[in-house]
Length: 252
Image 1 (cartoon, one colour):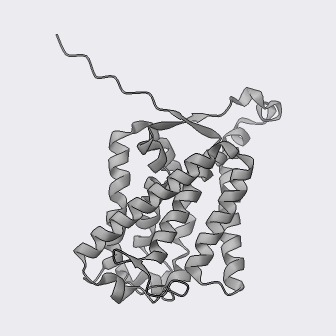
Image 2: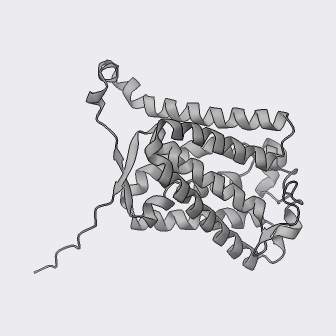
Image 3: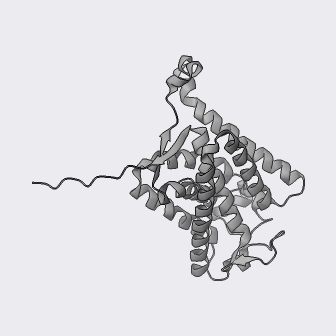
């Protein structure tokens, strides 16, 4: 198959699409995470061709450093990695406390109050990118630098939000499981794709689970770890038991 990464990116949109349909209460979170994940699409230039060598639509990776596939991939990954815990354990995001509990914020201009969560999000994203850049400069291979940076910043956020420890760990495991399942489906649709397109692992040479490189599963684990704690910290919510949707009354 010529455009393998495009197929993989489309597969990664499927879980989020299902969650969007069955959990309307998580749509705002999914929109926030899709937007917050966009800077990571531009990091493809760090992975290609060092980590893998897929074919990109219009050869965009060679022209601008990333492609349409990267945008779709990070949007899909952020959708299910940020909501896996909430879906499986029937939890919903609930604001931690009203703005009135913070006098300085109540006195601030309305636009500043609205922008504050995104400023927090931008700071966390910049920290991940800076940490990954530092690890790359120190000679750490790109995938491991990315995972280590996500985990390090997520642990720092957990230090401020200890109540998110259990959701974060469970979210990481669930995300890794979904990531593995999607990769298995990908390998079934395109036999031999991992052997052809992925370069040999540096730290886990030849190691795979059901034919999927352990590097990829590690990346899914790190993404789920970060994506569960990050939005709850940035947008100041906690996970509470989700209300059941009551059936619509019958006509007549």
